[in-house]
Length: 120
Image (cartoon, rainbow, N blue to C red; front, side):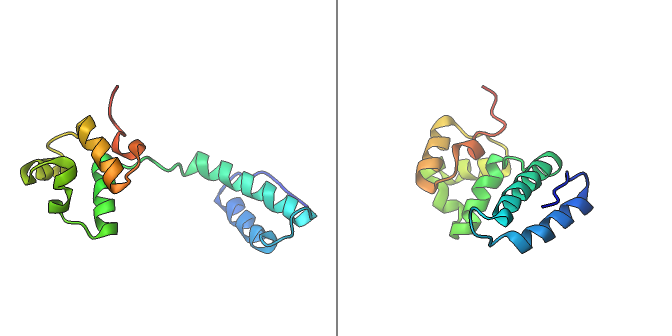
């Protein structure tokens, strides 16, 4: 096992290529140990250089709509009348705590996504 730090994207590519060779290794083997170390190094590099941002609440709602084939009318039980749904989706109105809870319970959108950008 010849493991070295991942310092740039070329190192990342090389780590992924090596990981492909040892990915199916049997637990407890030296290759499995190498796999575990590579995964840790890759995750650390990606988290530092390519962090995943929490979705904007409106984008999270639109994503769920797209995934479930929902229309703005389908959001009325969670948000309110069609005018309010339109205001929310256009960004002209903020989600209330009640809306956030209903969207979470009814559409299974994570609280973390619905509350991003909310100042406590």
